[in-house]
Length: 483
Ligand code: MN
Image: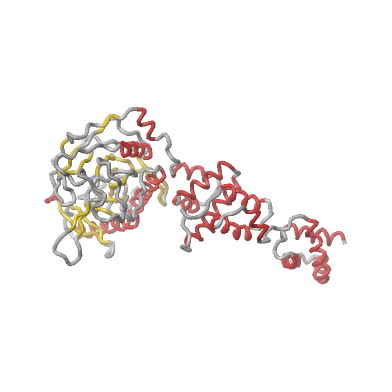
């Protein structure tokens, strides 16, 4: 049973534009512009759409798109081709966008996403390669607009899902999982703030689940939160309209983040006829088996594999998701798991999601700036597991090894953080404590076992925190028995 709101079933499909991580543009030997490059500094005659300028397809973009197919649990199409999509807008000087219409590079596939009531499979309709447009800027208070073509020709992969989702939670989870896949597979930097991933959500509601209602498309959402909020808003808006006896208009809508509302941008009546036709300047793609194999030759580990491997450590779900979210933390924990035992890996996982995450939350460090050294982490974990360092003192050493570096044992020595576990050294302190506390010793002999806590405390104090409390307790019992 799908969840319904007031007897209505919502149906949601998502289109996602992903910026492919190439050095140069899709059809021109021009470096991809930095986000803050001055306007119109990363352009050529091709980006400007000058007559006679001929596009040359960037092989790396095709390779990354082919790799994306595998992350979506399918294979790239061996045959695909490019088409011209015509529309007129100042930031598209050619008057058409080069895209793939009839024969996209990816057909089919799916993504499994985790939601609160289990796993949801979202099927993929298609994904195609296309170029991005420039940007039109409307300076406030002026009666003109400016065009910046730095972004024109940036390679994109547009991933289109089937309308398989029914709640805003599923929509958000799908958008987020796509983000993780693109980052893990190194297909995109997937920086949402810089617009590397943009989501369009198609939403409709219907009382009759066999028949889809009229849908609206809310475009250019750039955060998971806005995907969720825009879906919620559209579901409610459409139900309210239908309940009031008004029909839904099929239209493109925008998202106003400050008002947390969608708003109408253009209706179906002004829909474009894109006059698609094959681009005569770019030959169709005919990918060889070798090219496809090459695209996944150095395929990095994917989030699902990280989740599956970490499961055997019996970590709770939120710890696993925190590790998966921070790609460096996830991969680091896996590396520890592969080289050391499960107890070591589990301790490292908890440090990363506890103390290290806390350190990063304080703002001075980031996941990129901290030092993650497998040997240091494993050595520290083993020192704790061997009772050579208390877990409290380990946290002090941990902060050192991730910020300034250094060997755990050396830090422990220099800061006097090693536990006294060898009995000979401790026996002397224990005897001294027992001598100084005859009343407590007497009580203990008479069966008042709670006194032992007090005596262990005195040993800890006398040893300046370096005694191993378990061994101290054992020695106290041993010495009292022998008296
Ligand atoms: Mn598109």
